[in-house]
Image (cartoon, rainbow, N blue to C red; front, side):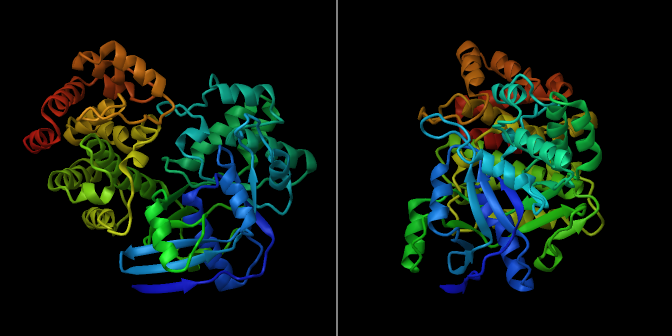
Length: 489
């Protein structure tokens, strides 16, 4: 194996960044860029405090026990590996609910860190559902139990928007300039959507505070890209064979990309030297990645998982699925994009298929299938709506919707049960119980979910019928017949 080892510096630095969402992607993407920047420049002013807002207290405490040092294994393929030690995270905190049901063990420390003048940047990877925005309308879900709790007790927030509002309120009261808020989640206009969540939540507390946030706080947009599968026992065994015993390690692909809107009033690291693209408008890159990479991932996840296919690698090596992905990217996704001059979308599609075929990653399709109700509006449905408005069909998206609907029943095409990890899982179960034997009624009930499906697309008879037809073929005749029908559409 061609192995390169890169050790982190033993010197600590000052915390200038607070990150909400201490997970594998943050540790394999943003933290890697900051570590590389620190090692190259010697600038130690951008150390990170990373906080977990959900149930993984073990990760927080595991990193503490390791003095916040961990390894990232970057595989170009099974024979080429760069092994990095990361030391840029200086502190880890837990503000979620523990096993005993208690909230916010380190919440006070987290809020104090966010409110400190030294903190110039707060970044987020909390997934789409962590913003508590209606996927279709983009408005704050004021009726969500977590948001209701933050409105009732704003100084003991449980959500990412609530933490941002309280920390910004403390800074305003102390006369400290606001930090910049940088979303690193896969959402279109993620900076604007984060601003929407924070300002609308602040309005429930104090209209003057909401106005100050709207006027004074920078919410730049960003696009992030790196495939980071969940760790498996096989991954830990591969690293142990290289002499790395690290319970906090992360495995990812070698490819990485970060495109950021350059709007940082309190300053930022010199990321350009590490390959970060600092631009005036991130939107074209965001949409390209969401519709082509993430949209393809979701298409592969639902169709593949229903057929018992376990990983992206296995799925992309299925001849019919690979052809469906290529068709979706070239014929349905790419034509909806408006890219800067010089961006070759056909080459981008080819590069994505090559990345999916990386034999060193075991990216499970069930992991990608999580939270579909939050992801599909921007990955599939916005593009399909644009095509419908131009009188064009979207047969690949229609098949994907049919597969998603069946997937949310909790049963694959062979009758094997699987968990449905989605904020709307209980609603899905009720709809399947009511309409599971009637494909037309079932599809109609799903398309009527206006917090997922844009109403203009839901009422498009051609799209609705295409989903019904695909659902019937998929569930009655199987994946191969559904893919064959797609080639004739």
